Length: 370
Image 1 (cartoon, helix red, strand yellow):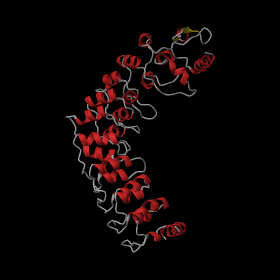
Image 2: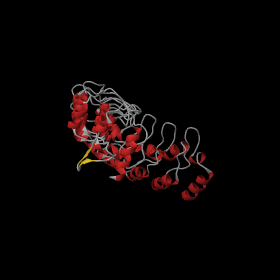
Image 3: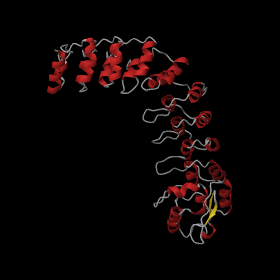
C-alpha cells in the first residue's frame, strides 16, 4: 500500500482548488477504508452507489482532467494502478467505459453525462463500450449517437467483431449498424470473417435491412489462414466459381499473400477449382504465388500439376513474371524445377528470366539448370 499512498500523494498535489472538498475523500477497497494521505482521504469505488452519492453532491461529471476529484475516482478503483503524472484528458464516463465499469457508466449516462464526446484519438463512447463489451451501455446509447461513426479503429461494429464481442456485435446489428462501412477498405463483414465468429456471420446473413456481400466476403476469406469462414460461406450459398473485378478466382485470392493460406488453397482444389485458370491478365494462381513468395503455395500448386510454363498475356511464365517484378528467388526456382521450367522462354518484350535477375542470381540459376 506504500506505493499506492505515494501515488495518492502525487494525485493530491495535482488536484485543483476548485475540486470537491478534499476532506470528504475516502478510498474504498475490498479491505475497507484506507487512510492514505494524512487526515485527507480519497473516495474511490467501482460501485454505482458511490457514483450516485457523488452525483448528489453535484460534482461536475464532464470534467476532462485525470485528477478530477471524487467523481472521477468513483468510476474505477484501479485508476491508481494506472496513475499518470500528465493529465489524461478523459471524463469519468470515458474512464468507466474504458475500464469496463458498466454499472458506473450506466449511472453516469442516466444522470446526463455527455455521450457525444471523444478522447484524444477521436474514439467515441460507443466505441469504448464496444471495446469493453458493455452491452447494456450500447443498448442505452445506440439510438442516441452515430452508430456508424468511424475513426482509425473502425466503427463500434468493427471493434466488436475484431474483439469477438458477440453480444455487443449482435446488439449493434439489431440497432442498424452498417456492415459495409470501410476502414481502409476493411468492412465489419470482413472483420466477422477474419476473426471468424459464426454467430455474428449468421446474424449478418439474415439481416433484412441490408444485403450481405457473401461472395466478396468469401473472396476476402480465401486470403486468410482460417478455413472455417470459407466453409461456412460456401455452405450458406456463396459461389465457388466467383471472380473479382480482375477476373481472379478464389484460388487466385489464396495465392496473393504470404502465409498459411495454402490450407485454403488445398481445400479449394479439393472442391474442384481449376489449378490453371487465368485471370484477366492471363495470370494463373502459380504466377501470383511466385510473386508473393508463398513457398508452400508454390510447392502445393506444382505438386498438384500447375503448368510452370504457362504464359500470361504479356508472355511471362510464373518464373518470368516474378523475375520481371524484381521478386525472383532461388528457392522459387528450386520448387519449380521439379516440373522443368523453361528459363530460355521469352516474353513479348523478347526477354528471358536471365534478363531480369542480378549477375549473382544468374550465375546461381545457370549452375542449377545445367
